[in-house]
Each structure stands twice: as C-alpha cells, then as structure tokens.
Length: 118
View 1 (spheres, rainbow, N blue to C red):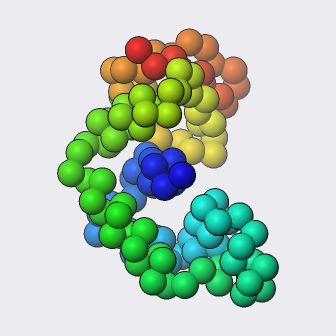
View 2 (cartoon, rainbow, N blue to C red):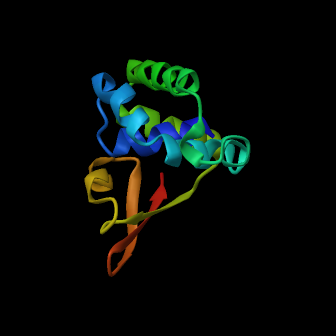
C-alpha cells in the first residue's frame, strides 16, 4: 500500500525535502488511505495517526528517491501487475504521464486519459 501512496506523491512532484511537511499536512488522508478506520475509531479522527508513523513514512518516501520517478513508476506498475492506467487530468494535472516512454496513450475521454503499460 505504501508504494501506491508514495507513487501518488512522486507523481504530484513532492520533493524529497518536502516529504515531512506534506505528509504532516496530509495526515488524515494518509491515515485513511493506509489504515482505513483504525485511527478514526481509536482517536476520534483520521488525523489522529501518531507523528512517529508519519515520520517513518516520510523517511521511507525519501528513500524512494534513489531511483527516478520514471523508474519508480515503472517498477511499481510492474510489481502490481498494472496494465492500464487512467489519468484524471483535471484533478491530477501535475502528473504529466505523457512524458513516460513505457506508457502509451490508448484514448482520451474528456479529462481522462487511458494508458497501456508497454
């Protein structure tokens, strides 16, 4: 699950130096993505995830920068067996998936582009 979360932030352009700040701002979103209802039920709010866990996640995220975003994306898609990728260009315009040579655009429907992984 952390690979998907980290991939989201890599594609969004979150720099290695900004990881702690961004992860701290997104505590509730991260907690909900990784732990579902656990922290909401035990602390009363999604953002109740302990700072120590956010710090550990930020450190793990920073370690993903040993490879390029292109390599990280390609490896993550390969490991997960993803063949198609749907990009919501309106909500995630910063992703810029057209730049990745291992992705081929199959079609575009409004704000959505569908890619196949080569």
